[in-house]
Length: 315
Image: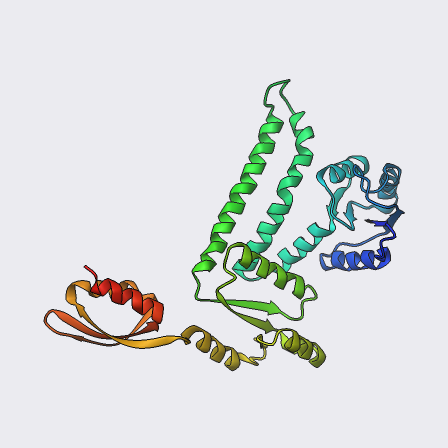
């Protein structure tokens, strides 16, 4: 069952609910009916009026419904009250969208981003269950098992968010970020925005990035042309048909190796280990060993070569 509000704010409730129904279908959720109420704003306790919610309880038996999806964002109290009256599970639009993202996330980073978003959305909503949990035990001034359970769940979610955030922060050590986007996905723009938001949040937005649009073989020419105008620096490929891969490789080479230079070093044998400690960021072009020194030609970015040089010349 979909529920929505017609508030006369120039937003067509029918179009919004039709879009929500399509989102539900993406998750194989069968929509049986819509329930719309005309009101200026959502009820603070029930989203719709209490009488309207009580009618949903009757529809549950009549239509064999087991889920209510609100065309908006529910606060914890609204979701709990609707569940209590109807006996049905309750979700809102945001939860549906996050679930779609979770189903379609393929990369490790994408899965982490989606799980973080789901947990951060869920965390404040656990509060809505606190009253029932606290009733499980304990008197005035005591901590019953319900309250302990509530705090354990909050702590578990916070700990998981912390772990996921640390994983994402590993990206900040990258030289280049490849953002791979499925252009056939109808939610592409939202996912791309979410990706950039997370990169900004973990302070990785200054790292060089290549935007790659995959599955161009599943899009019309007009769609590709429109995206080319909107994202002029993007690379368009079809991994399935191996189209555009040479262009991507050349772009990767240009971005990764631009700004590199070669430099000759004369290094005391005792300090050769300094060079090898930067092996991941340097290429050794040539090396000649003498009795107490090594002549090396190194290739890398200027800042890395400068660092090696200062350490080699240092005490």
